[in-house]
Length: 130
Image 1 (cartoon, rainbow, N blue to C red):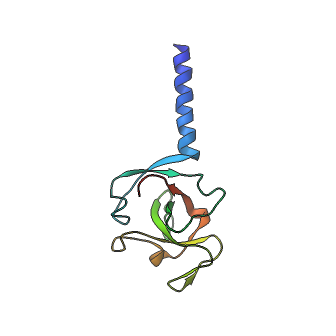
Image 2 (tube, rainbow, N blue to C red):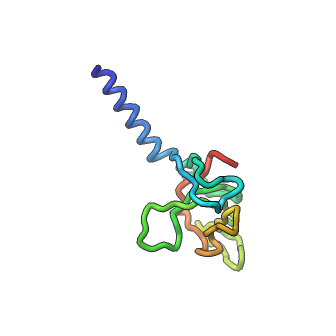
Image 3 (cartoon, helix red, strand yellow):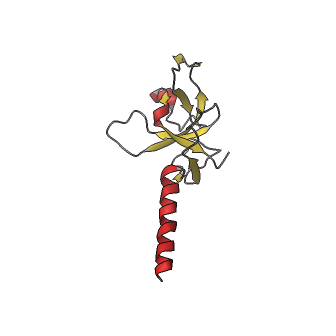
């Protein structure tokens, strides 16, 4: 019995560590990334994807919500459309700034509205889906 309790605790601890530091499951809320990512579907985010490299054009990422003061814990998703050094829609992206767009512009709240996303706000890369 004691062995089962210890084994169960180790498994739970392992799952918590993986969820906290490596992979996390997220639910898409809204239509901003349709048709590639449907509303109310679940996907994995790889949190260590950008430890040694920066996001590339076309990567689908999770990032902290932009332009909302006082709200903590909200995440958004979008596709990287511009990387540092590029100019998009009159905006020159500085070091560690990325231009993020939703795949469905009619429903998307993205860099066209709130400007570039800084590297420190990027939480990870989608590893499931298109």
